[in-house]
Amino acid sequence: MIKNKKILSIILLILLGSFVHAQEQDNEVLQVIKKSYSTKYFSERGSVSEKALEDILLCGIKAPSARNSQLWRFVVLTDSPRTKTLLGKRVGNVSYTPGAVYIIVCGAENEPKGIDVDFDCALAAENMYIAAQSMGFGAHMYTSPVKALNTNLRGEVPLPKGYRAVCLIKIGNTDTDAVSSASPRNALQDVVEYR
Ligand SMILES: Cc1cc2nc3c(=O)[nH]c(=O)nc-3n(C[C@H](O)[C@H](O)[C@H](O)COP(=O)(O)O)c2cc1C
Image (cartoon, rainbow, N blue to C red; front, side, top):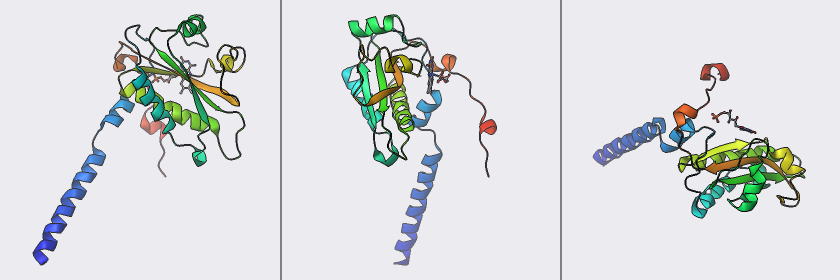
C-alpha cells in the first residue's frame, strides 16, 4: 500500500513537472503572435479559399465580448469586379489586390450601458488577424476607411441595419518575410510596471 502511494506521488510529480515545463515552452500560438506584422505588400498570386475564410471568421466570433453580447457583424468583400471598382481608387489607404478578401468589422450603433462595442470588435478583429497570419496569409488592420464606409460609401457597401464600421482587415497572400516587415516595439521595461 505504502509502496503504491510512493509510486503514485512520483507519477504526479513527473506530470506536474512536464505541465510546468510546457507552460514555459514556446508554442505555435506564441510564435505566430511574436512574428505577426501588418502586411504592406500583398501578392497577386493565389487567393483566400472559402474554407480558409470561414475558419478566420470562426476565430472572429470566438472572441470574448462583454456579457457575451457579440454586438458585431462582419461584412466580407471577396474578390469581385465590385470590390475592384470600390478599392481601385483606394478607400482610406486600403488598396485593391486580386485574390485578397476584406472583412469590415461592424459594431452595434446602440451600445447597451456597460458594454464597449468597439473594444469587443477589436478583440474579434485581432483574433481574425492572428488566425489569418497563423495560416500563412498576410493581414493588415485599418481604421482609415471607417469614416468613408460609414458615410458616403454606405450606398455602395451596405452595412447591416443598426451597425457601423469599426475597422477593416485585409487578408491575402504575401511574399515578404516577417522579419523585414516587422515594426519595432518599445522594450518591455519601458511599458511594464510591477507593483
Ligand atoms: C486600430 C488600428 C488601426 C490601424 N489603422 C491603420 C490604417 O488606417 N492604415 C494603415 O496603414 N495601418 C493601420 N494600422 C496598422 C498599424 O499602423 C500597425 O499595426 C502598426 O504600425 C504596427 O506595425 P506592425 O503591425 O507591422 O508591427 C492600424 C492598426 C490598428 C491596431
